[in-house]
Image (cartoon, rainbow, N blue to C red; front, side, top):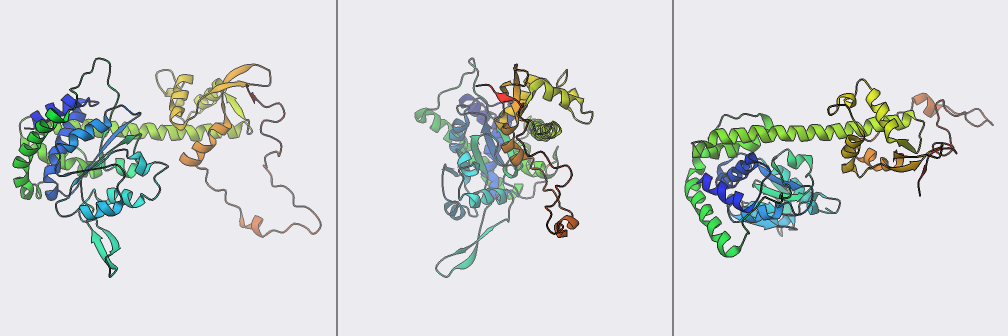
Length: 390
């Protein structure tokens, strides 16, 4: 049955790896036993751009999971009232409308998705004409699709499917309701006939997990289904678990590396006396010279201009031609490009002011002396500083 489901999903969607296809297959099956589970794993379907198949995957999930509830822009109040003892499977498309800069008043929905990963985490609200405190269940499996990574609190509770655009030679079967839906509904009904009677059994299942902590909580329902199926599925599920959790560790390390790069570049600009721009080669030279930084060993021959531009691209930072004091042009990074990224990802700690400086009063009739180390009041870089090319 799982083999048939895996084949059907792979016909309609090109997933990034065999492990991802295995994970999606087991996640669909686990939705049919969620009333007996202790954790409700999220499925984070993310991609760098539109056209990567995220919405198509949700279409397939909608026809195969237990009691689907598809939404794009629903209110938290609706979701609170729909979730009950037999919760739906939430399918949220365009998740950037919830977590992006235009999220607005969706913090309640974000809190619900965080809390609903674990059983017995209700949301309390004042409800009814008598305004009584009421506990609303939050426990429900959820798949969220959107461009770019979701917040860390969601990704940490999710099986992450990093979608990519199809290559020219990769073919899929067009999704058409007249023949796709009956096929997928038949698979859904077979899953329900097999798994619904086992909900009481899985409540006490304690499978052996290849990972620990929250990763184990998230993958446990999928491994339970694989163990129920037997055959090659227990080994396949655990191999997918290891591969995909390790991949996310690499992704986290890459994110941490980018934050380290921002901090190091800020230090270089500070050391250069607040210049408006630095040549790419000059910036690279200083970064590589730091013996405690990873840049000398980055890649095969150390950090180069291509690596630098690639690491900074996600922050909207790129080099441009600048004219320097000798009149020559060179690729350079302007300081003002980094200001927003520094504030968001590595804000400088607030400088503490000694108590003596707070209480000290200047001598009567004399202006206070400037503290040592004060930066010059002229424009950064001085009159001979670099000027952007027009």
